[in-house]
Image (cartoon, rainbow, N blue to C red; front, side, top):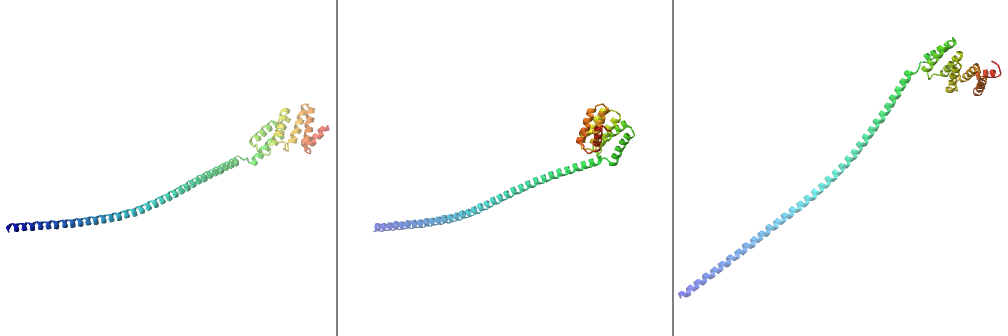
Length: 251
């Protein structure tokens, strides 16, 4: 009886322990399941947050890329504008330099022209003084001062080379030498009249004077040829009329 009771008591104890162990295992499974659920929830939350962050980053990246692209476009436009402006400045600078060069050339030309006019005005002979110089030399001839007349006319030619009286002055030099009986020098002087001023009113008289010199030197044939040349070159002039009379044997 005591043995039976002991066995029954032992069985109860074993059964209770088994039940207690089973109860503990269920709790552990419940805790594990709860832990797994918590981990799953945390993982899901983390994944959702990560997804949101990735989306945000992508959105920001797109915005940043767009902003960078806009900045690049703005920079390209600015570079283009700068190049255009630089080209405009270069063109304007070149035009300005060309304008300055043209103005400088015009100013130099005007200055040179003004200086030339001033020089010409300063060097232009006084007509009254010129006329008096010519008359003084001619008066020396009329007075018979032939050598003085030659010197005066030569001075006149040197002082007034552009005068309208230069051919006449040269003629009177030849005529003065004729009066001095220096016929060769006279002929040379008159030939200069014919060579330098063939259309001068004194050209026919120069030829007539040459013929006179040749006649005085005994060169009758040469004198006759000179008179014929006078008639041919300057017909109708007073000198030509005298040439006709001389060829006809009249003085």
